[in-house]
Amino acid sequence: MIQSPICEMLGIRYPVFQGGMAWIADGKLAAAVSEGGGLGIIGAGNAPASYVREQIKILKSLTNQPFGVNVMLLSPFADDVAQVLAEEKVPVVTTGAGNPSRYMKLWLEAGCKVIPIVPSVAMAKLVTRLGAAAVIAEGGESGGHVGELTTMVLIPLIRDATHLPVIAAGGIADGRGAAAAFMLGACGVQLGTRFLSAEECSIHPTYKEKIIGANDLCTMVTGKRLGHPVRSLRTQFARNYSKAEYGGMPDAELENLAVGALRLAVQEGDLKNGCFLSGQCAAMVRKVEPAADIIRDVMDGCEEVLKGASAWVK
Image 1 (cartoon, rainbow, N blue to C red):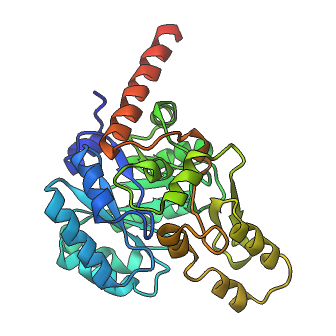
Image 2 (image 1 turned 45 degrees about the vertical axis):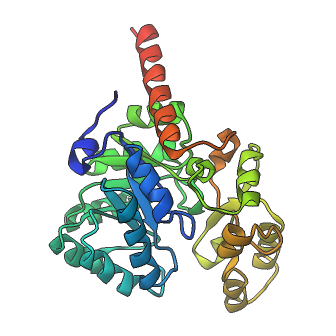
C-alpha cells in the first residue's frame, strides 16, 4: 500500500483527499471518505456558519476519523465560518478562491492544520511563510473555481517552490492520474469530480447521470470577465451565461445571473438554470459506487501503474 508523509501527518490510511465541493461535499459524503481511509472534506462554499457547524456534527456522528472543512474565501460568511472551524477545532482546514492570510493565526492557534489550495507559485510561497502544513496545487482541469496553469505544469513548479508536502488536484480520477501526480512530486491527490459518483454523494440524480454520461468535451469555463473563472458542464445555463458574459451584460447583472445556480443543480437537477460544476475528468467516471471503493480503486490502480513503469524503465 502506498504511504506518504501526508498520511502520517494527518493520520489517514491513503493519501487521497476529497474535494470540498460547495453544496455537494456535506457531512455524509465527507464521513464516508474518511471512513474509507481518505480525508473527507466538508465544503463550506457560500453557506452560513450554522450550516457548516451542522455538517460537522453530522460527520462526527458518522465517523471518528480525521476530516477537513474547505473555506471558500470569497463567501460573505467567511469570517463566521472561520470562527466556527476554530471553535470546533477542525483537524484540517483547506481554503480556496482567495488568500487565507487573515485567518491563519486563528486556525493555527486552535490546532488546525491549514492546507490552502494554491493556483500559483507566489501563493504557495506566501502560505508557506504563514505556517501552512501542506498545499494543494490545483490545475485548471478541475471543476469549480480554476486558475490558468494545468496540473502537469503546476505540480512540479509548486514542488520546487516549497518544502511543504504537495497534494495534486485537477484532472485526477483514476490510478493513472494519481501515479502521474506522484511522479511530478506530489505526495497525495485530491479528487472532486470522481466523488460526484459516490453512493454517499447526495446530489440530484440528474447531476449524477450527467457526470456518468459525460464525454471529453463536456465542460467549459465561464466567468473570466469577472476575474473568477469557473469550470462546469456544458449545459444550457453555461451556454447562456457565456453569451451574456461576452454580449455586453453589465457586471452586476452578470454576477446575479449565477446566484443560486449551483444549488439548483445540486438539489433540483435543473438543467436550464443550474450550474453543474465538473472537472474535465468527468469523461473518465463511468459508474456509481461507494466512496471507499473509489479510494481503493484509485490507489490500487496507482500501484499497478507504478509497478508497470518500473518493469520497463531501466
